[in-house]
Image (cartoon, rainbow, N blue to C red; front, side, top):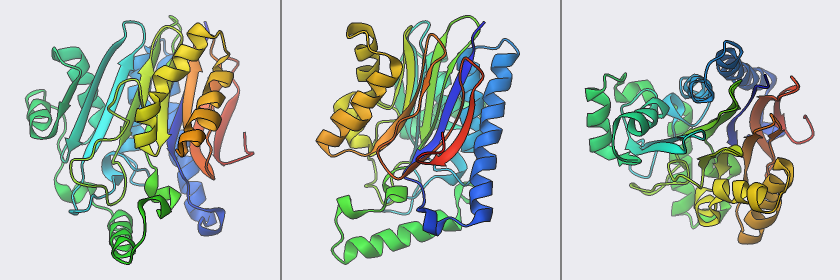
Length: 311
């Protein structure tokens, strides 16, 4: 039976000129580890939902990526993490926002989906639920990285000197992790997790926990987005891709390209998506300098890439 997995570690990569060989190897190793974590689940006959959660957990635990342990700081110097999951076989979904102490936000999003009557929980209530469910919690120092703290200080200085929101560098404006999968039973699933944007307003919620925007899965395809979240919300990005596949009979690649290179750019949005359809076809388009990405499609073709032209 066909299985497939695609994941991203965020659009808006470091410029090639700022990426030394050692750091690039570390990013690629992190993508490889997450790809193997998810694909091992699929090879063993596991569900698409288990696979995307395994892949995203690996990325949340890697401080290089803006999710979980590597999350960025908001204007108040706090971390407010978000995550969303969707099981396409039942169109069940769960998401969380405003987390500061949950080691793996994606697992809490899944718990909301499976063990509450709701789709989304946030802030203190979500963390109280995580504790009741026995999910792993971590102190603030676990999530603190000097790289993210320095980025906050530099961004606050830039803003104080008159810098605009649109002038922020890609690697600070974007930054999310996510995975999509097709399992041997034909089920599709998506999971996304993020720390948000560097120096975001406290309380800001992006596209990741908005089902249909940054996270979507149904019987046709699964989508996880990364980019300037406000635009992905306004475009209903994940659902838009599925709708084009369902109603316009477009291929997955055509639908993703229409969103990423068409609608988003027309609106002024930048970023990318990873997507997989019910046939095991994978799409990984982005309209910025790069996107940390990896995939194994239904034909077994493997990709691990950062910049344009590597696929």
